[in-house]
Image 1: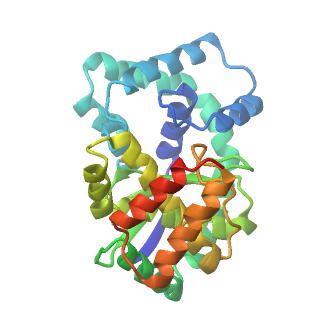
Image 2: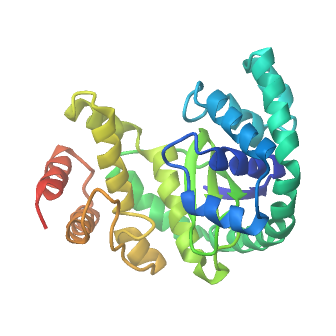
Length: 294
């Protein structure tokens, strides 16, 4: 496996607009606070087009939609959008990005320099062959997956100095990493997030099918358990702690307590040390932990 890091102005522009619109419950609210403080007041027109974006974007799939394909995978995003949006939506989308261009450019002028530094650092550190072999050998056992070696593209995005994040919602060979203003000396935290997203991108298919069967197609609960499982490994789970020397997570998700977090990471540790695949027994025990009151 090899990681290729890329900086895309269009991808960052889309990320900036969609996050500010708050169309999705998982938007980074702290990013919006940070951007609004830096960019000062937004005009009525700017606020209005964010509402328009929210209205349009909400009609389309949450992940791997034509919007992600257009802005992350194409050099001419509006040509791509023209293929999937109505004429009215397409013209409105062009208006939205025109109105917000000055705000975005002011931010991108600063962050592009930082993104280039991150690209150079990550290209070297994350592509260490011994590191990749060690991690893959464990994930293949846990998730009972025999993936072929391949190149994964990582698009680098805006962040704040305190927050870093990632996503696997573009296509089968690309993830995103929000990292621009995060301290570069914490590079192993960034690498841990990359591997967390690689689990979602490449390893979870069999396990998630098992979860859906276990929870009788209740996708919301399956998503929660799936995320807790990945988090118990990277970036601050047992593999992030042991291999990357990251600090242990104090709370994997808001839905679990600090005490439950410790127990979930210890459960993952047991499976890593035994060399066992994630199975129904793992799920049963994780559910028992979630139900416990701490």
